[in-house]
Length: 410
View 1 (tube, rainbow, N blue to C red):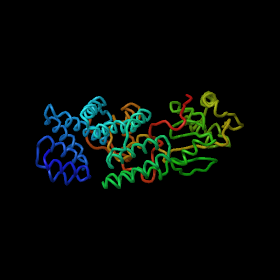
View 2: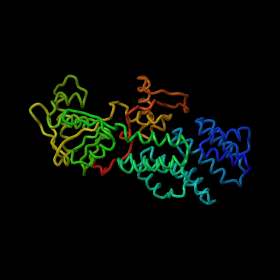
View 3: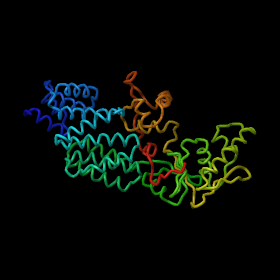
View 4: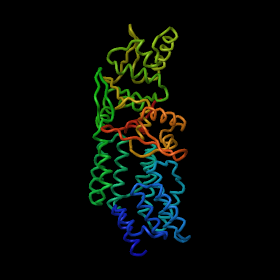
């Protein structure tokens, strides 16, 4: 490796892409193309970066398998940043195996991190935790230790383990300070905001207030019966009943939870569950059927009893009933939760992350675009969607992931 290539590589490691480009911008050999691609990625020109890395991979000779594998890992990182979640796991695994075989343990570990970040993004936390447990960050340079701690903190936040998340972020801050890369420091500060921003609204006894993730963690471990409108479950400290696929039952449960310890009139329940402005006998008959189904679904957690004017919820073990609602009521809040990270998403990537059909996501995006809440650029398969971050709020509870104690009783 010549002196210019070595100097450019050191500049990239220090977070100085312009300095690296000054050294190799006019060169078209394979190593220079690869470094130019990484520099363009750091500058945010992901399309140009991908093109340069592919040119570099083709330019490396058949014996330069390690260099080609590094190009694959770099391109995989670009795909992740640009939210191309159809990341080919087999290709990345093959590149990682090649790097391990030739003793490049650092880049092999980074390939693992990319897959862990992808799994974390789409809510496959168990698989991500298993892969993360296989890595030992002690030998990593400060920049990679920062990345490790950010992943660990993200995992803890999604699990609602806020003490672990704060400890990981503190270690990430120290590692970023040692690395001396401003972009890493900014990323750590951005991740820390999640713990200090309202994550949900707590509704209890007719009053509501915003709560942080730490408070949500405490509520879910308390003796209260929680109607969770972020995950569409009803739970206490021991049992979780999912109503995510039964929207009518959840609408009834939420209305009863918000009114506790009082009752809810039949007319209001009809409006909340069915959107009925004028109730007739068929609506009342349907309400009786759905209340019967709700009784059966919640039989281990609470009783649903009839009153003179409607129905009331009575917890079996819990001392009180609380409702956790989204920080902002929005029909397509789950889509906005992903877009709030400031990255540009394709509809196919959103569908994969949400576990739903692409057509459903497209309808949601069209509705949000009509309301001026999201914007798109590009056409066809290159079309991407983005939105400004929701300032002062965190959308952690709207992302797909199990919460503590989620042995779900369907």
